[in-house]
Structure formats: C-alpha cells, structure tokens
Length: 216
Image 1 (tube, rainbow, N blue to C red):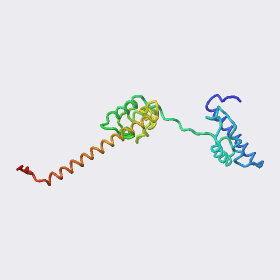
Image 2: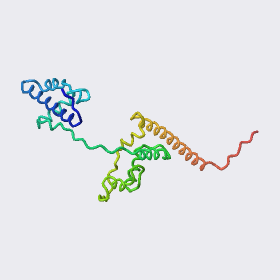
Image 3: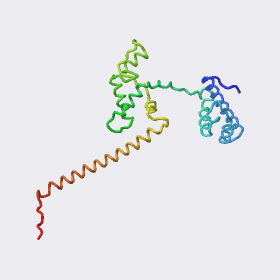
Image 4: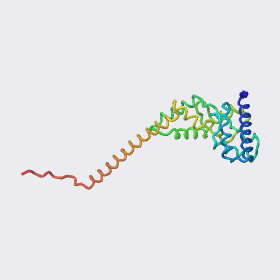
C-alpha cells in the first residue's frame, strides 16, 4: 500500500482505514458474531504508517466503532487540532529564570508565572515579547485596536520546559525537595520562636535575684 506523502494524506488515510475497520466489525456482527469478537479480530489489522504501534487497542476501537455507528462515515474520525502556541523567546525564558533566582526564598515556578502574567495584563513590557500592545502591533498591525489585554501568548508548560532540563520531572523533583527542606527550616525557626516566648514568660515570673546559699 502506498505510504501517505504528507500530514493531510496521512489523516485521510487514517480516517479511511478506521472506516474500513468499523465496516468490517459491522459486517461480522450482522453475520452473527459477538461484538467483542468482531472488535478483537479487527484490532489485529495493522497500519504502521498511521498508528504509533501499528494498530489500535480493543478499548479504543470499541469507542470509535460506537461513535461510527451514529454516523457511518470516514469524516467523523477527522481530528480538528488547534494551532499551537508560538515558540517562547529566549529572552523571556531568561527573564523567567532570573525571576526565580532573584526570589528571596525558594518558590514554585507557578508563583513567578503569576507575576509575569500580572505584569502582562498591566501593560508592562516583558523581555522578548514587549507589552501586550507591542505584541498586538506586531501581529495585527496599527489598524487593530484592542481595549483589554489578550491571553498571555505562551503556555505554562512551554515556560516550564526552560527550567526542567533534560528530564521533564527534574524541576518538579528538585523543587519539591527544596521546598520540603525549606519547610523543615521554617518549622525549626517557629520552634525557636516558641522557645523564646516560653523563656520570656518564665523570666517575667522569676524573682529578679535569687541569693546564693551560704556554705557553712
């Protein structure tokens, strides 16, 4: 079978292949087979160019088949993807990291992100992107006028990747460990403060001077 040349052809071939699978399942059920047996047999058909493992799992094929029964057409399998967000400028990534480093204590990156989004809504310029008015001017031109700031153009996940390193979990693991350590220090400081309060309370109720017992 000819390999699809581009993404549009792959999507069309994928939808047609799923349509054929559902037709096969429907014919076998009409011939007297159980639905589970028909779906199991259809799930063994493979197309390596269209699916990650060459075929669908029985559970996924079951869901798709019953969706197809309501409207038996290849068109129902088309995936309508939303366009991705633009790539994060390096200057904005540096600003994100600098704000993390400038914090007086270890804080989650989500806290820094909130401050950056608040600055964006307030009309402040951020490195690599400028203010939201600058952003609108570059994207839409001077004829486009907006009163309210648009959505921040970069997702949290895309900014998190700037600090996650090779492993996506490295940031999460390190920050959790750091916050746990910070929490332990703060608990100890609170203990010291409580000891100071207890000692101050005792000192207020002690006599100012206790004479030494003279030895005889």
